Image 1 (cartoon, rainbow, N blue to C red):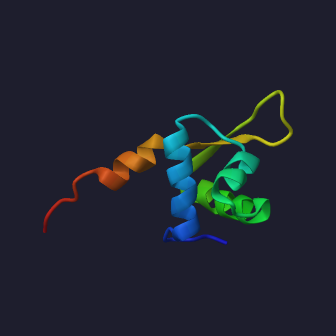
Image 2 (spheres, one colour; image 1 turned 90 degrees about the horizontal axis):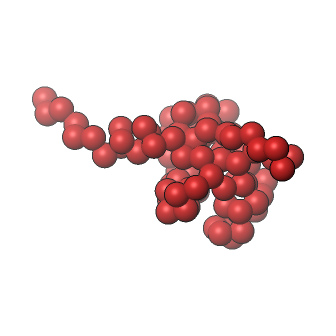
Length: 83
């Protein structure tokens, strides 16, 4: 499912990743937010499709870590041209 707007769970995931400053697993994000693993997975899949996060393969884990795409944050805070 392709989303066009961020919802409250998406924003919470982004906040957790931004504050962590390092890639986290879905389990770590789930534990930090108190939101179920399945819900976090569903939302991270959508965020990946939107270009908000990237998945990083790790050699020590079966599941990749998720990392916030900082260019997305820069686009959010960039001044908007006035019309």
